[in-house]
Length: 243
Image (cartoon, rainbow, N blue to C red; front, side, top):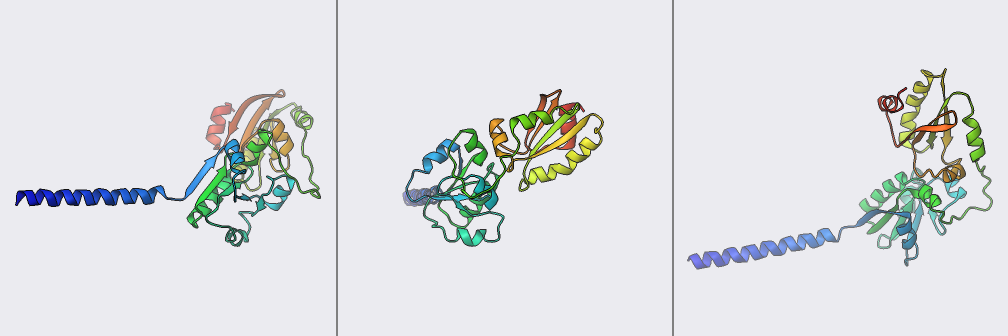
C-alpha cells in the first residue's frame, strides 16, 4: 500500500512539473514590448516587413522624420483607426521626439495584441544627436529657430537667465510652467526666464547636444552654473540653485 502511495505521489509531482513547464512556455511567448537605443533601432529598420510609425504631430513630422515612416499622431482621434490597419504579426517600430509618446503608443499596441513592438529610446532628439539621417517634406516651410549666436545674445541681459526647454505636448513641461513663472516672479529683480520650444528649435537643441526635455539651465554672466534634466518641484529647484 505504501509503495502505491509513493508511486501515485510521484506521478502527481511529474504532472505538476509538466504543467509548470507549459505555463512557463506560455509566459515566454508573451508579446515583446522593448525600448531600444537609436543604434539598435536603426538595425531593426533593415529587417523585412517592418511597420515604422511616427506618433508625433503632422507639423513635427514635416520638419523631419525617418525614411518610410507613417505619421499616426497619438493625440489624434484617428490614431485608433490608423493602427487597426497594421498587421499584428509584423514588427512595429515606434518613435516620437523624446520617447514619451512612443512609449505610451507601444504599451497600447501590445495591449491590443501586437506581437513585437520596439520604442526608440530618446526619440528624434537622440537620433539627431547621433547625426543619423532624416527625411523632410519638401514643401514644408518651417523656421530653423534660434541659432547658437541668438541663444548666446539672450544670455547678455545683465541678469541671471533660467532657460526652460519645453514642448506643447510635454506633460511634465506643462505641469512645471506655472511653478517656474512664480519662481521667477519672486526673483524678477535679478533673474529672467526664457522658454525655448524644442519643436521650433531643433537645430539649436542638436548643436547643444540636448537629447530630452524638460530641461532647465541656469546662466550667470553668460556661463552655465546649474542644470536639471526632467521634472522638478519648487522646493528642489530652490535647494539645488541656492536661490
